[in-house]
Image (cartoon, rainbow, N blue to C red; front, top):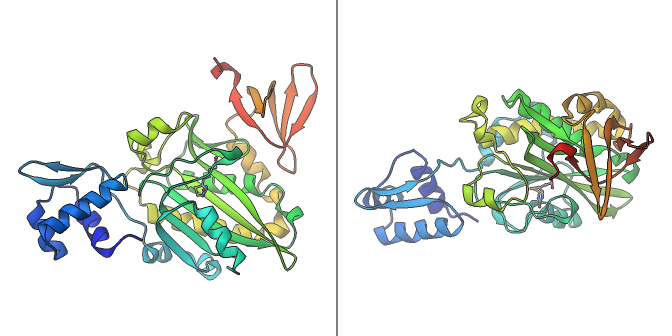
Length: 329
Ligand code: BTN
């Protein structure tokens, strides 16, 4: 939980200028020592606050904290009606894990968990998802489905919706890499991790976890194991708001989840293909220890990857990691 005092401090420092310890003490109604202590707490979370001698404290990059009211204010009537609990955590292990625990104790479809920072953010294939404080979107949505069979292709549909929202927000170059990596200029901008939390009363609870890079400090960028991109690098959407982006995502995702049991991937397949940056390209598909080379021929109706092998045989794959052949050293 981020204390109200620390939230006020972040807001003051996000006005874009250096603030003296005296000014901050006055605005926050605390002592200068209290300001120093709060600054240290925020620095411990990874915030880049500099103390400039004779001037005061300066934040390297302004930060817009996630605010429930701002998100709710940006929702369409339909999304607002479908959204249930909205939890914004300062720091959690993983929003997917929090929501999975909530699902076990009866959380309803439409429950949302957001965090400013994750200490054990998870990615696909058991990877770690770098989750520094207050720079990105880490969100998880819960939805109940009447059968796991109806989930086929859901992760691809979510990927298509994310690209739709990002393009509408100005990131025209946002694209997909099978199965659901969100890319910009062939660098990773975000990803989707869908997890099943088991069946309760015949229903299966599905956690849709979404991570989108909005601003990544250079220190964290260096820790990411592949070329990464962040929305702040995209000129057309500079100055964007994380709260606005979360609302836009919910406006697209909540109605889509509600209709997915009846619509399925079929409603998204054409759109998904149109966003796929790797269609027709020569790639290596890495699956565990195996490497399969071929040319991407599209996806099946259930979202499997179609790969034309060098032996002329077309095969289907349900998992793996694509790398462009030209990019492989
Ligand atoms: C991927 O590897 O491409 C998927 C990344 C998904 C990351 C998000 S961040 C919010 C949610 N909580 C997690 O621990 N993971 C997902």
